[in-house]
Length: 575
Image (cartoon, rainbow, N blue to C red; front, side):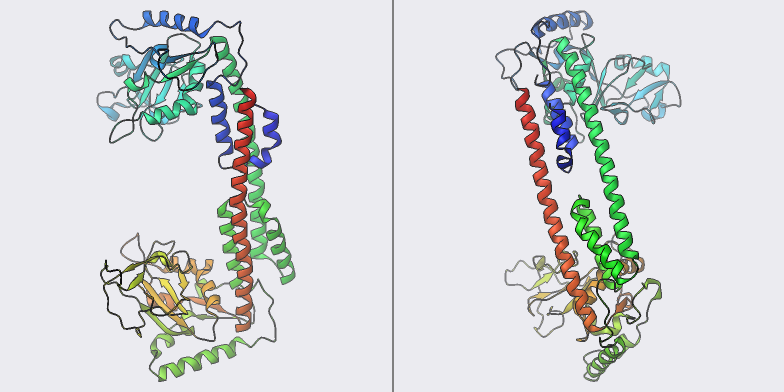
């Protein structure tokens, strides 16, 4: 293991998923294969060590409990070993193996003081954690004398989600007992427990534990399986060298993890500062400088997908607050825009295409307002519509291949329309019905989890292809509004907060919004020309985010390959 080589490349490999976790496993893997330290021909052989272990076991094991658990030369070895190592089975090098027990009365016999009763939540690879340890009375402990813990024992979790966790009982440990979810592994020869602990934590042993799980309801490792696990046994002096080397390299891993945390903290601080300046910047020139800095340095700062998601939200926030593009005095005023929309609505009302009540009854909710440029104005979404709001239909599903297709909620959950998500239904809907989607329809989920209720997407496909379900509300905007700009507003952070706060319903798992909540959504309205500029700028910046996500994926792949290469090189060098 070349620590200097790993440190030299740390900045590159640290971004690999779970880099240090993989490194720790690799160290243990080298250790139990005899490739971490040099072999010394002067060491007492593992064969002689095994004879001493067997002698100790013959005096420690109660007559009649011995099992035939020797590892014979004719058996296939899990992997090749150095010449002075041997294979043994776990049960053959231990004087005791097996799970603890449950005290009569279960939890009802726990008390504030007494003998520590160790459960799986107390067992960790780096030692015992006794913050929430239970206690039992001395009399109970005496009745459970067969599962009493001794200093130097290995305690191995053998059930549940923590199966495989293992620790050494320290020499200064007072009396203790263990539950049935924890196994005691007591070595027959003192001094071998330290190496055995490293072996139990190794990928080799852990994979064996997982492959031997039994039990229909709860994962478990029975004694008869545990005793038969093959153990790579080195000479005792080499065991001591291995343990020392593993501890040294694990300390190096601790340093690497500390460096990772420090590096990540710096990235988080820089990213948070950049977001703060973006969302609270001063004049347009200062804001543009912050945007250029953030975009320019984001590849170095961004190491996680959630950071890019945060950037997308910041872009939307800037867009609907008028901070992404210049404001031009020559743009047609918003007041003129509103007059044009009202004239269009009036004509449609006269033609009985829309109802006057829906648009005249909308009111602006001031609680969700955000700061916008002076030339902009807020209005309620309902005052910008020329159709809707209208719920879809939800007839029964159909297995007919020619049945009409109706989109599912998943088609719009991402905020972008995805045509792959639909089901076929039994329905006979005329092609001129508004239950068919057509280009320009803006769709809102009226029911979903609080995170997604009210999420919006727009349809830009052919008419007569998709129907939409009852849990989706459809509206259509005036031709004097940019559909894509309004959609940006509807998925921006302020709007998502609005829908989340106003959604209600009997089912906590699926709160709903109604038509009144939807049409009263505040929309910050800029001149139409500014709407177009904002959409163009958002497209440009979202494309950058897409590129950053692709680069992040590529970087993770490359760093993972580099880590694998370095570990492979270390393995070859130690062979």
